[in-house]
Length: 64
Image (cartoon, rainbow, N blue to C red; front, side, top):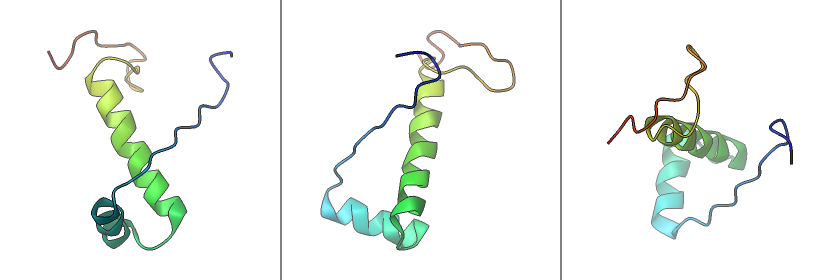
């Protein structure tokens, strides 16, 4: 796997969470997946596991 290979993340959602996301994002699976991707990226950046796109640097231990 290279750094440019796509990564697929499967997430099983509990029914109430899936329904809530449908209300926020609309009914489509792609909009739900986009919302989950956004939240996941934000969480990984906050933990220092993904670089900030503005600086391209990883803030080690940013949320600790």
